[in-house]
Image (cartoon, rainbow, N blue to C red; front, side):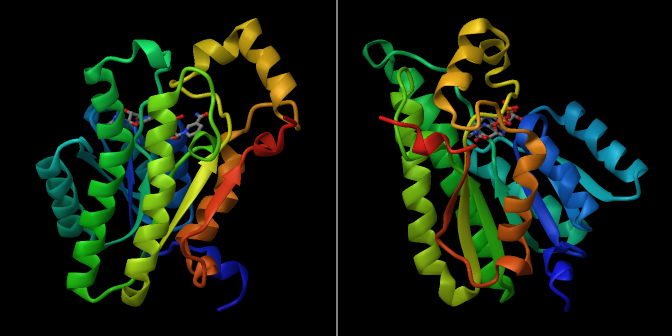
Length: 258
Ligand code: NAI
């Protein structure tokens, strides 16, 4: 296999959570271009069906499945549907997440629980379900978790989000340790700031734009396609000896001066 072919996802079943918008939608389209049999999972099934049709129209393979990462039976059903349609899921992009800010003094019990339930419990649930099915099938695979630079450093108004994403970082490393013997690799991408439905109002306003200019050494937001290389590396055979890695893609934001 030549070096570039190693980045191919040809024939692999790839399940992407939170694929109805933003980073998940973008990387689902990329995975299809890389030859994957793509399973798009999220709660908004009509949006997923439209994206799946687009992918098919362009010659790719895609299936839309209803998926709520906070619900075990929904996760199991999505994997079951994926397997029945395309075969065992070999690559997972654990991307579903929510990101509403709230001052630490004002977070309610329900808000705390909702954040952890989606951004940490959901990642664990999907990763465990994927790994159990891979081990049962005697197959290796790759799980790519979407953490955040806020899992590695902190920011005002995001204590619940930071705690959940830091949990994703440690979960990634712990699962990598336990699953390596099963040929299952577990890595994470830690994005800096990318404009998506989660944050577009902030980055469209003067305050948000000034923040990016001041805090990010590259003085700009990330472009979704700047996640393509890191995702393909971790998902494909190109990253075959990488596990437990947390890869920041942030224009140098983690390095910003203190
Ligand atoms: P987004 O809001 O466009 O995408 C999040 C997706 O997750 C949506 O499709 C949403 O419907 C889905 N989702 C939420 N709860 C779900 C649930 N219970 N079950 C299934 N799907 C659910 O935002 P974006 O930016 O694309 O976020 C993707 C991931 O990237 C998230 O994990 C987020 O925390 C992370 N991230 C984003 C950054 C950014 O600057 N946009 C920075 C760092 C991390």
